Image 1 (tube, rainbow, N blue to C red):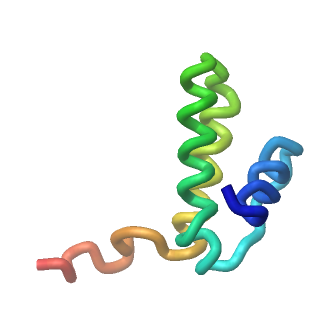
Image 2 (tube, helix red, strand yellow; image 1 turned 90 degrees about the vertical axis):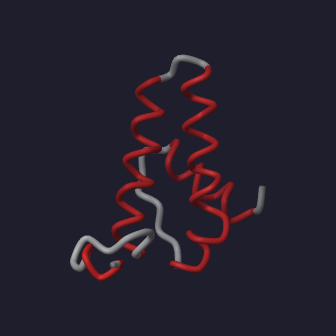
Image 3 (cartoon, rainbow, N blue to C red; image 1 turned 135 degrees about the vertical axis):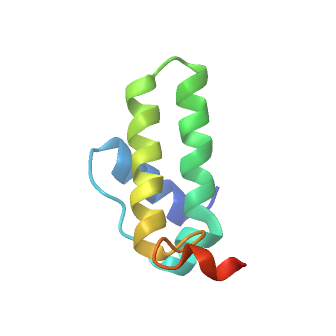
Length: 76
């Protein structure tokens, strides 16, 4: 795990929102957050798992990850 991903997870553990560039998020932080959520699920820590997944959702919306909600029919 890279230093930037470690810093992002530390911010999440402290209860702070993650602040990062779109490039860093797409390249490394999103994967680290999902792995963290899976580890939390494996250890039955559903609160941290939900917080991590909520942060993934927030950052997906902020950095435009996936299909755009504005124009979903543009794929056809």
